Length: 150
Image (tube, rainbow, N blue to C red; front, side):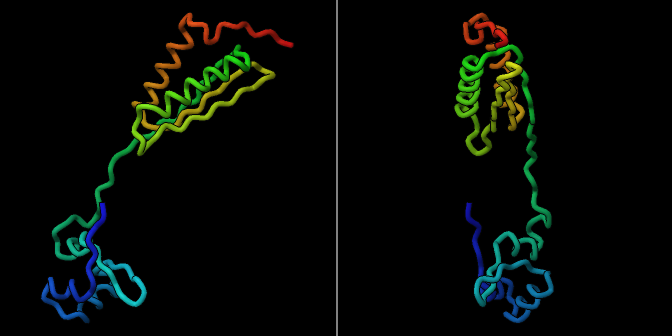
């Protein structure tokens, strides 16, 4: 959403002040403005703050983020690839596209170990963890192969 911007002259007109008074407010910090070239522009919200029509501190939306690391032992490369594809596909579909889950997978060939790192919204992370739990505890063939040390 784009906020309306006013010139110094428009603000002076609106408030019934002289242009020099508005510029003085800007220089003293009493009125917040952005300098574009040789002119100032005042956002509607900043004008509201000056006139007492808006709170002086903007409200910040509360947002929580979860960091999770899942370690899976005893998987071969093929199973890790299948699991990684499943997790990445799930993370990229059906979630808030403005705040997507960030997922990274790492496979350690020597230890037959996979790590999945998940960063994001608590609800979306929980959903992905439930999916992982269901896949890891199901008898669906995704991770059926036994791993043999070479």
